Image (tube, rainbow, N blue to C red; front, side, top):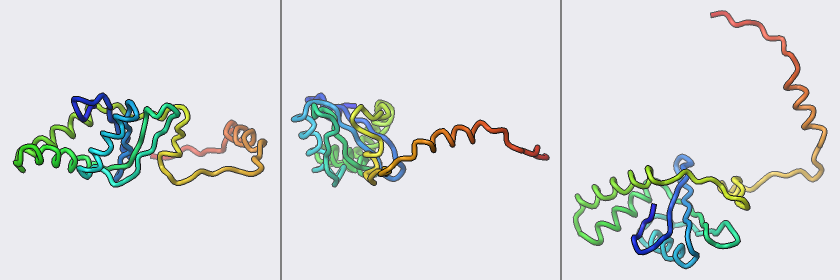
Length: 148
């Protein structure tokens, strides 16, 4: 979905429950303009982070409530009608949900980065553990039939 008709930046989101990972795609300068507009109209208070070396994909955190507030503020500032602003905001949220492709992480953008919770690694990984798990998974288990 394009937020502004004069700007070719598209926006998509991934719903993570109470927060949304918003993804902007386009040219770096245009992404910065769109992000500043989103920030000014209360769609986010987070940081913009570019996720690829071309700086053509960027992400930030928002929520359904904040995106609704963005669409409401955008329309209310233009027309000064609260009733119409709510109708416009609901329509734009529906368009965002319908036209937004579910964001698929690109190469160089691991999914663990989306959660910003860090990552786990082993200093000395146990290479035999993988085969132990596979062998255990293929063993026949003593299962008793369940009675209904």
